[in-house]
Length: 292
Image (cartoon, helix red, strand yellow):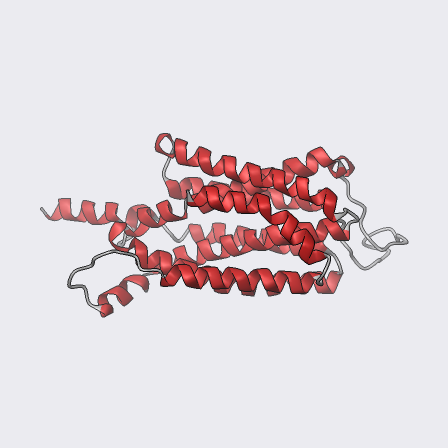
């Protein structure tokens, strides 16, 4: 139900973004979206979990959330979620900057929201027949990183300084895109739908990956920490990706920075092995079996 609600929100969101674009500057729109995201994440982290830990002391809870695998998990999910949220908010601005009218953007973005909904429902129905949730989430995050450059090529052109040893001089001082056929509406929808679908899989697996890493006993605390970290990361990622855009005067550099952040999360995944994680319920069960 949560995934369906978020996906419907992404379908209904483009008209609201188009309205904000017509009244505020792109930087203001991005800041407003980041602040709203932070408020939602803080509210989610403060909701009562309903879990009962009996006689566990606060010190034991703090020791749990300070484990290496929990820190890595929070960083991976926070950076991935913040980057994809920034990407979703940047695409309308890039299209508007590329000459696409707000009216034309609404169906284009809503179709990607439908792809997100389908991906969330499909992963919920098929996960029991697939591999572990952490593996599926890792592959989906990599797919998102791979599709962002394609979406970038279909919507923008990369602005670079003209130099005789780098590029032939152009009157508009931009690099013409090689994938000219991506400018067609069909390919734009295809690229963004693939990226949004991968994002939907990632968002739909956050709870299951957390359950796989730390177990049901600590899931509420870790999810609260993930929500808070995601809210902070959304503010930081938005400002970080704005720097190359301000230097190159192009949204393409911002898209490539997001791709680099997603690829960085792939490196962090290498330091998180659920099979040997001391917080993993599977590891604790194997340890108990050996001791018995």
